Length: 314
Image 1 (tube, rainbow, N blue to C red):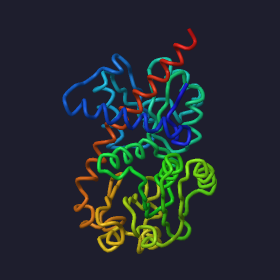
Image 2 (image 1 turned 135 degrees about the vertical axis):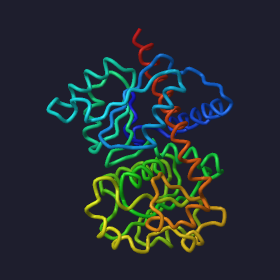
Image 3 (image 1 turned 90 degrees about the vertical axis):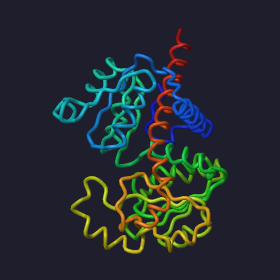
């Protein structure tokens, strides 16, 4: 059974297959050709963390593929109320065809997947946000920035930074990460990415200087400095991240045609200036829309792999 828990579980060829499939399905959608790739299938969507884009994109996506989405809040099911995760997985996966989980601990997601009879998709954990990175790369392809790009990530060494590390190390491009002191990426995840980079030829750079990271790059990206669950740290974080806002001065060090990506929600005048956000709004909101199409590509790919597995057992 193939799951979509982190990008490190896939080869470069497999990731590009999913991107190509997403691009194909997006083209069909724009032409109002709704191919029922997942006809009569049900996607169980488990949310321990709330989200606008994740719910709308997955629920719309499965509908456009001919199936139905079932929203399951942690307030509405037994998850976290004493029932073991493995029992929840064994029950739900007998009733639906695929599961998306948006939760806190990566270990919780992986335990669910271990006991699931159907593919499980990571809608976000504290460690990784792989569906967003597939979205970002699809956007890079569409804006002509996917051919040996240099990408600069500015900000917190969080789940987005970790996922950028996995994408770069698998696909073999250059990634520069600039974080404030004390906010570096997880050392174990960095070590894994560096091991993959030796095979792919990726260049992974780490430092504390945003200007050095951005200079001459093709893509600049960032994320909120205060993620869900970190509200009590807000004042301290705002002090620690002083000088890390992506604005026109910082973007001036990138290539003249560089694009800016943001996974949203964006907090203007914190991690990105109002001017920079609005200047790159077309890219950013195309990126937001691409959550829908990238995730459809992932779901169809996982279903195809499951069909191959079932077929090989006959």
